[in-house]
Image (cartoon, rainbow, N blue to C red; front, side, top):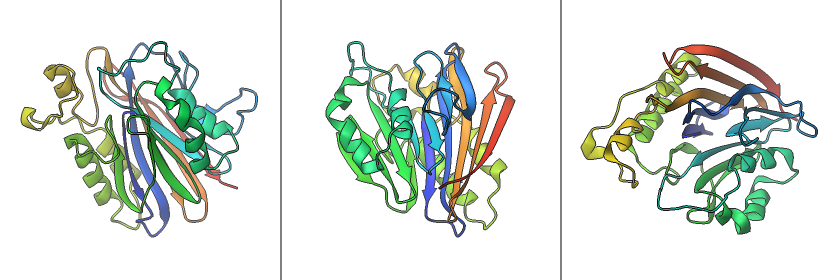
Length: 257
């Protein structure tokens, strides 16, 4: 994922309301969200990166979930780094509590290109980045990740968090309102752009919540809602990169346990 915003324990019905976009090169092959058929992964619901074999976001039948964003800094280069998508997949596949999993991966995390990793279950949510090597328990409230550390106030992330706050201010959450905030293609003015070391025209192009360029952009949007009874909905929309229109929607309802 390249943008994640979520409301944690702020709604009367839902413990988690999460909305996320996955941004990627259009040519990178991807499988839609589904329950995996691979051995020992049958309880995992996620899309799949068919190039490297991992995933950017997923849930598991016991109630575990995880999502990942890249950290943008072109000055950080690793030689033959492993795929960051395996960090999400391994958490979902292994029998480790969130905090224990982050403690487990921390010593080897510098092998990967920069990343942010969110891992959660019914007991809590944790964030880890290999940029600062810190693991943090997330407090209730509105939070977000883009391609910097947790809650870094980039314009698009602040806009997404504000729009999410409006969406969850009602007892009945409108899913179309959540998807609408993820389709916001407004670009930040130049004076508000972050300086991450990429050319200004690229900073401008990726400054919107929903990204569309000639070769790179938002490939899919995902909602994950988990209520206080342990019931969840996972909804993925995939887009035609030439028109940005929805070409497929996949909806799953789960009861964790």
